[in-house]
Image 1 (cartoon, rainbow, N blue to C red):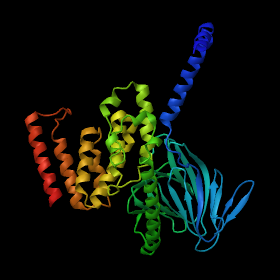
Image 2: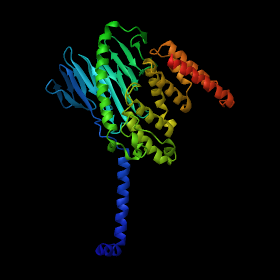
Image 3: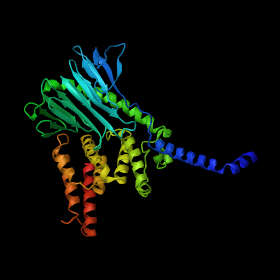
Amino acid sequence: MNKIISYVKEHKLVVFVMLIIIIILSYEWYIANAKRSIDFDTNTYAVLLEWIWKVHREWDSFVLNESNNKKQLFSWDRVSTLWDNSLLLIEWGDWSISRLWWNSSVLINVNNVSSDFTDIEIDFTLEKWKSWSNVVTAMDENSYFNQRFESYVAWVRWTVYEINLDESYIYVDDHEVLLKDAWKAKKHKIRAWQTFSINLLEYIEWEARNLIRAQLNKRLDKEYIRELAKEIQAYFENASKIPASILVYFDEKKKYTRDVLVWNISNILEYKDSSKELIYDSIYGIYQKTNFLKPWDYWFNTKSNLRSALIAIDYDKSQFLEKTIYYDIEHALMNNNDSTAQDLMTFLKNNSKSYKNLTEFFSNSYIINWSAKEKINIFVEEFNSLFDESGRRLDLNKVYDAKNNLRDKFIEWIFN
């Protein structure tokens, strides 16, 4: 010990420099650890489901069969199904999937996904026949999942859809697709349960003969989503994998439950802007891995808590997530989960600057029935009545009475 003390006294400058280096390295390690997430594989793969398919590369090509049924894919790979009844699954790096039927072909244009899922860049071209895709992530303005065909680009965010070039249509099974004409710059919004003719540029009736294929795709999607749910469960049950910068906001007693993320929002908001940005990115990376969950899934409450935290930390940056709340309300109403729908609408009422858009969204919904739409309209109209024309709140007595009336209506709705 004396030797150490003596050395420090004789080499103060060296020791001081070493301490500075250690501090810098420790800080860099903390930053890296704060933003890291569980080591999910963000590569893209082609997986053979039935028969044979082929991958063409500029310098090589290879065929997959039953004994060699999985291959990593890269930008500029062209993937083709070769025989009748061939079926191929593309597992994109963000956990989204595309399924190719026989005699189909796609070209991968861009294929980049960050390890924390915060930056997603996926762009591919359907060259032949048809594909079914299930896009599971939400994306901000810096990320995208685009599918090209002919002179069109389909912009997709958390959507299930099919594109059929032979019969010239797009069918949306869940949420919506924004279709853009690359030449005329026209846009068409295609919502759930709608079929859009690529040739006629209008909505058409979906052929009943396509129902069997759609049901098969939906069954395969359910199996795939079930496996994703297992990944999420393993993730939340391993607290050591959770970024250090937000681990301090866990309720330790609930760490291994579906309410694992109980956020102390007030403490987060007290952080300086640079720290909040770091925390936001960490939470967003985790949220992306839960975005696919529906109101009936076990971990849905965790997803909702994550989303609430993002909106509380930075509303402007997270405003795109409001659309995911609309979709969750839609799913809850479809499955008669009125209490969840009410909770989500109440959250929007208290936190959204564009809450009035909820009525417009559901007025165009092809999924929920007219009775549910009527209830949503009443809820929004009564909430809006609490404000005068300038947007200021009316007197507190009127607000209190209206809240009670609104609460009674929802109680009647839920139990009837």
